[in-house]
Amino acid sequence: MLVDEEGHITGFLDWESAGWYLEFWEFTTALRFVPKDFWWYEFLMKAGVERYLEESECERALTSLTVDSYSW
Image 1 (cartoon, rainbow, N blue to C red):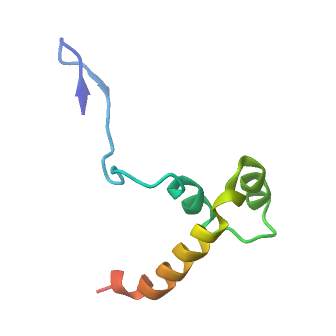
Image 2 (cartoon, rainbow, N blue to C red):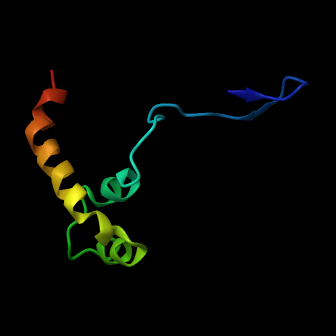
């Protein structure tokens, strides 16, 4: 929680996903669960995601290998 000098709440910080990520992380994360026939996929391609398609495929492979490791 952020507060000013008078103790008033001015904002909140959510550190849940905070960290240092590689350059392509934002792009590959945006592509992670998007079908190719969805408008968002086309938008991302125009935004420059095509530069990171190989990295995206690697992340998909890692996710498919580890998806069950998050359940108890």
